[in-house]
Length: 237
Ligand code: MN3
Image 1: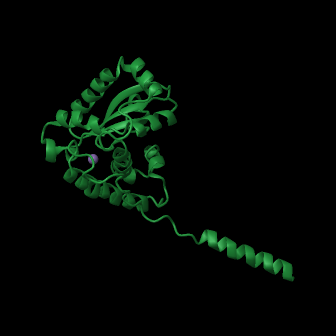
Image 2: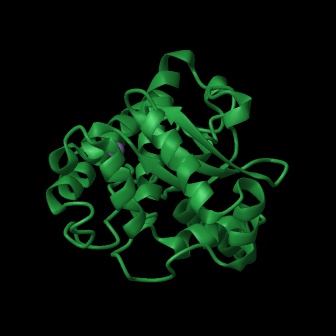
Image 3: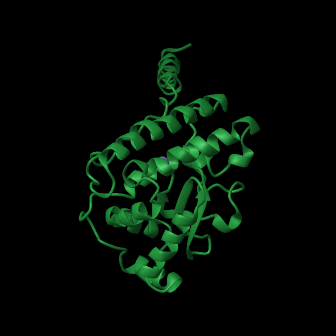
């Protein structure tokens, strides 16, 4: 080996080892809330937020991390994974559906809320026009959404989604199912979520007890329309 090739070879080997020796991504960690647990008071109470985020969301993440290990896909992107559940090992499909869905849904949900009075109070021009053409008016859209959220039996979510043909629609899913779960939710519920509401009892029971409609109507005060507008634009609205 001449001097030049020695340098090249060892140099490449050293550089290569820096790349290949990089550890796998650490386990998925609980994302921080974008505000304090008390920031959504009085509409959503601090204790509910602290438990919902610190216990429920954390539990979904712990079980999702177990599923990623079992799938031998420690670096998989949860958002990508929930779009291809039917292709996963059958013994992990339900775990990804429940806990991958739980992690994705809650990560969005925290950002779909913001302290009341912060940011825009409704959809921007483009999204408002699309809502009006789809539902008649903003109020009619809210009624449709409230209806979906109220009538969801048991636990689940209500959604405003952009469908593949670019139209807006309101839908709801059970448990932690998400409108991106192709092959899991009915095709009529598939789309890109731009707004979602958690109607599991853990989201409201401490303050609102059994009165889910009161929780839903209070929640509109803390909807983060800046985030909704941003997601709608990203989805082609
Ligand atoms: Mn929840």
